[in-house]
Length: 136
Image (tube, rainbow, N blue to C red; front, side):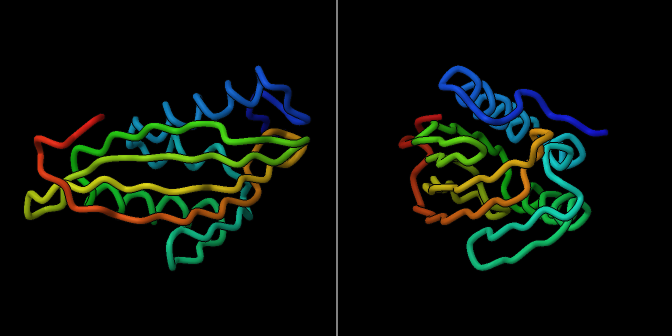
């Protein structure tokens, strides 16, 4: 049986650990690594995209990191209860034309009993920035 530690119900310590593990995985820009944190039948909303299943997540992430170059992400725990978390994040990336962006957003996460993310709902806004305005 697949497990992704730490497992719910979360404490402050394990919730913070889970968020840091997610940040580290996403900053690897490795779709295979990232998608293994999700259930086989995971449900996502990412901006206006609705994505269902681990394999669809992997394909989505491949496309994302083909378009979002020099990607760097920071996540912050906003709150948690039992098997759910709210996370705020910001990330920076460059598009294929060289324009820099900072994306801000919030995610709601729900985990199964094995610590795999069953649901991920993300609201994201992009702001064009100059390279000199980068923070990450």
